Amino acid sequence: MTARIDQLWPEPMDDLGDDELIADLAAPPGPWLRVNFVSSVDGAATTAGVSGEAVSGGLGDAADKRLFELLRRVSDVVMVGAGTVRAEGYGALRVSDDSARWRQKRGLAAHPVFAIVSGSLDLDASSTIFSDAPVPPVIITTARASAERLARFDGLADVIVAGTDALDVRLALAGLHERGLLHVLNEGGPSLFGSLIAADAVDELCLTLAARLEAGDAPRIAHGPVEAPANLALTRVLKHESTLLLRYGRAVTAG
Image 1 (cartoon, one colour):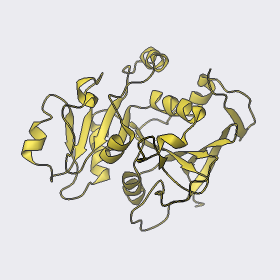
Image 2 (cartoon, helix red, strand yellow):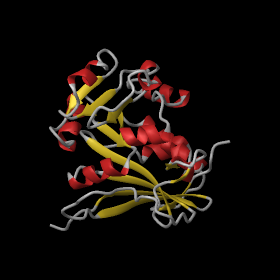
Image 3 (cartoon, helix red, strand yellow):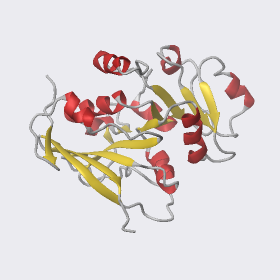
Image 4 (cartoon, helix red, strand yellow):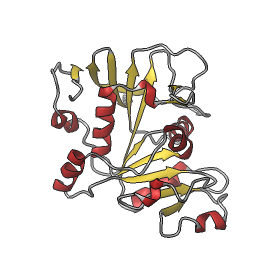
């Protein structure tokens, strides 16, 4: 059964269908970076998984998973940090059959491209991420990656070198845009999100607020140095039971 999602604001609407949710998710023409995270009410970005390892997936409910799929449906590329890929157990990136059909009807590839960010290219070339991929993934790395490691991914992935010692997210995004991948969905992790904030590259944040308290020492959804805070404007509030699904865009500064 599909998780019911109601809209509280800007206009109350009950039991939204996928088309109603997607209509509000369409990105404007040109490059666009959307970030999607889940957090507990007290700010934890992870909870203890079955294995005891801290993961974000345990915070999300059925509504979060529904919106998660729809966000992928409307994206050209899904960008994730390698640490999150390992911690969350990512496999080859495939959307649902409904999403694939929706995309193909609109002239899009059946599945978005999977872009994995790893500064040192510490990735397993034998992973199903590559062997089962419906489209070749993109790897975003830096010049720190050795020629030996780069060679492991020949024929498996398209590699973007963005930065010398540290990742240059602007170069990374430019590399995706050059490949026609304009609408970027970032699914984590906190370090990558922090770098995107520092580069003033975030156009939109979708934040699921899980109705639970985690306490402990769980990380926030973003961390890292930022010269100036980024102001946001609330654009949509959705609800499923006690879960809030919030959407923020860039705040418009009065001229």
